[in-house]
Length: 369
Ligand code: DAH
Image (tube, rainbow, N blue to C red; front, top):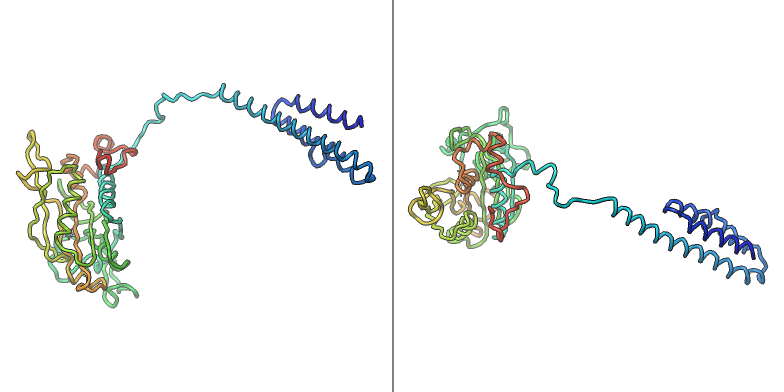
């Protein structure tokens, strides 16, 4: 009887005296742990006579519960005290600037690619990509530019040394010889997309392209975005509406006039070159109005031979495609004059023309805001 009372008294005193959570846990283990003294007392119940157990059982259970409750209460107290101490000693000055300050900027080319993805996603287009090291079948042949076609010469192609090999099994050009090259345009992604997934197709494919060319408006590596729609009953009206919607959203100007000029591309029939109307404001030419024209892209209805090369029936499936220089779009929208500076990696240029990483383009916020 006095054993139990003593044990209760001494344990409760130890609980009250525990100065921190670690000390409290030591008390808990000494009393209620596997080898604890309360646990040891509980174990004696097994050897008692039923009459004795009837008396001792409730007493020992009450002892264990009292101690457990005291430990839980002290734990809450100590935790609250520990939190108060942390709150009192730790402080955070929310007005301090971010350190180190934001360093890099988003390159205008990446920014424009993000803007394009945002605008076209709203129209139901997915983003597709393809390899930069292509083969001549995807880059030319499947796009209706056969071996002897003058367009091959016009593309100033970089061929890969020793890149010539018999088309491997499963390659769409099977049986022939393929030559590897750096893709001269993003149009081969049209081919890869049509081969990989059944229509309807709505994609844009932004990416790097290469041609052996260099001056203030041409660099050996540059960026294009390709657009492709394949479905039933597609016509030039769909193309014109899509391009108008894109150009309005991209330049953030409602007063947009497009001029479609008949042109020629081997992979489209009919083919059009698209000019955007612009006008002089305060000595500079800006997008909108129709005083003057700037060519912005090439497009047309996908040639039936291209559709057939991808294993689709051109009587059932039609589509339109367009291809546009991303660097040029960036220059027109953000006012750079020399394309070469895009690729110099000059930190001053990047700070001036770059974008904050946190300014993600959104249609509601204005894509280029
Ligand atoms: N691939 C063409 C080029 O690099 C651009 C182009 C024109 C792409 C018309 C198209 C298109 O998809 O329909 O010059």
